[in-house]
Image (cartoon, rainbow, N blue to C red; front, side, top):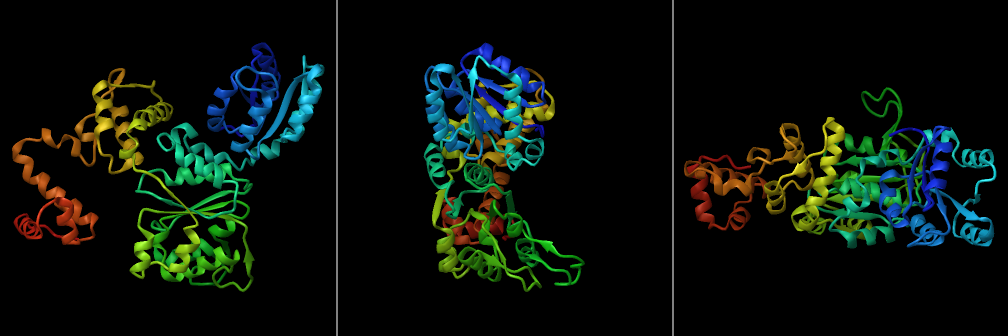
Length: 442
């Protein structure tokens, strides 16, 4: 994504919109135009503008209504109103609603207009855009497809300082939703992410809180932690259930007092970061088992959001798939492909144990291997090939049964009673199968 400032023009007068676009692009700005305000509200989250220039009088939606709606999505974006000479009082009303200035049409002085824009978008501000990393997330209509109720909750909670916890299976897009919360918040700092499951227990404390020079062997210089880096922004802690009890206690203090010290440090550091956490586990169950602190649970469970797995978003799967295919075409450098009729049925009927992450993997394999204009999905593209099991030859049934037992035992952590229940067989039968196939249980 370009470092140049991004400007959106929402104007139903196509010739005037084109005129503004030309003079802005001559100055190096990146410009997108929209002649329909409703279309603009849908597409702007994918563009993330620094500045929006919108007309006051448009069909379907007037400029003030558009301004109010867009401000909810882009609280930090600046707005300039376009007005005719006779509607300046309306422009003043728009400025009360959050617009920073207005211009009149026809444009009396292009130089004054460019001067106004350059004051609002100095080059150095654009080059340190705090939202650049958010281009990784899909547009909102894709991200929240089939989850419109969740989008409404996020719209309500994002502008607050409330801690949000995201519950969902692996691959459901928790990180992308955390980024969306940050983007819709009033936070001007960075979005910082840490995956507690991906960092060894001995290192997570130093990664989170930072350390001073000499704090431990190998600490040859001081280093800020993720909490410190998220100052004025949002810290997203994925897989929070993987924190040790020691780190849980220290993190609890951060949530309570907004203070902490680096490892080996004596100076107390204050943070005003906003916290979003996520887990694919039942935290309350872990509390009962003594594996997760009860006081920390109540601190993070203030605003829970449950993200459904992809198999429960059947109507959204094809829409998400089309978005991924278009993204892949840019990544791989091939023209977008159309899903075959058979592939569409497979996508809708498959259980997607790996959720969106698995969907991306399957589509990328198909995209790379596609020879025609259609993307045809094959059985070998799927890691967990449940949808094709009926097509296996009879001699492979034992292998399928063996693999299914191993998968369920792995899922239950070796708990044979629970595995038998999930497989729909008796515990005695499970023990017999384990012995028959000489399986090594987790």
